[in-house]
Length: 550
Image 1: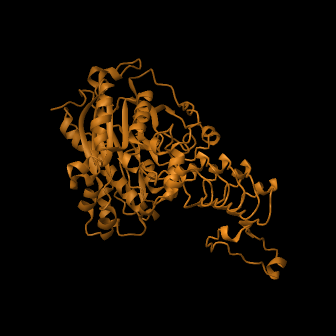
Image 2: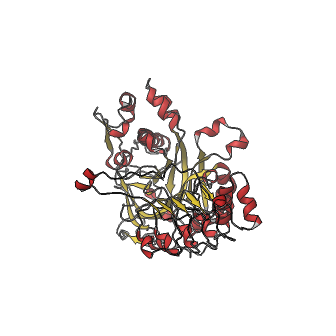
Image 3: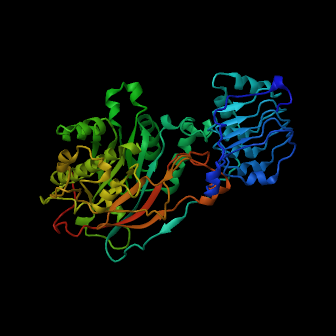
């Protein structure tokens, strides 16, 4: 019971309900489950065994005579509710900030004069009780404001010193040796979702301080990473319109790049002042190695409208998502063939189709993800055929078997999804579960390269550059850690020589980094980097002079 009824803090707490196991359950050997524990009385010291109960979700230590809480409380990693009210606590352990699942922390009626900055790491906290403590006026004023708990936690986190060292260099994983006995061009490609500014908020990433979410801070880390790895082709997603034209393009032009960009389709309906904040996709290429022949925008909502053929699901589910793909048809320059054996002068200028895409994110719309990917592959085939007619000097038809494809992007899909199955195997069943038994079959038939009615296919022969064991996650947040970013390549003309490995998992564990962005990691995605060798397509007519502009 409370030492002083006047000071007793009694929050309404309907969660503190319990049941007593009946005798029949005991006889039957039913196991009890007790995620809550209450210790109340005149307790001055707690048994060290308490901190072994890491299954606890609620711990009530209120109305005791506790003067300290040991750092070992951090071992109760499942705690969501912690009541330390009405004790004699003069300080709190910094380790309390490691209990990141906490939703309620009650510290009322203690003797606290200061709070550890580490409490700012409790980004899921809904209720912080601080009444009845001799805290500084600055803390009291902040706490008393509307949304005071959130503001106080932000203040504490923003002022918490970053003690984590920089993560170690990511390892380079060698896969193969370059073929020195025939003409090959060697180049590197980067794929990177940079996390656009409007999504980088404390509401989304509450574990990251505001100053580390600020675009002016993050953009330096992003451009430094891009320059560090010095890829020849750079594919970026979630890059805002203003960021492309006023930051990335000028910066990378100084490094010998040029680039193309398109925002999501919604930009067309916005004013100029609003449009600059719309994110989209960009492709940069090193001008000493590549020439841009043509660029192509793939708007999935427009394609959904054009191919709906009366399908309500296509109109209501697919057309309403304004994700895009962006493709650049590049041509190699002579300087890229530096691997030992030079090609014939007539074959030094080879086509390479580079595409980046950002597929819809919502897991509930797996059908939309798969259909957007099908649309993308259908459009890439059309781009190859159109480019063959436009740039092909010798008049033969260029098809997907003659044009290497590099496909990079954030596909928001797991490796076992229908999207990745379709891309890597070249086909997907028309009855695939991710179509959700909705009315798509009729309108999707013309997007397929297959004449079979029971499957949809594409004509590119693609492989994944990264395997799951090399990169176990490409997106790393508190709530989600998994693979959703990919680099695909045409396997008959391209071969990966090496790739950038994963960030050291021990660094995350040692420094208790529960998600990104982080002061040392500017995005919630990790960049992918692959070195490729590309061969001269053997079925291009020997009399050709490559692709040329007309």
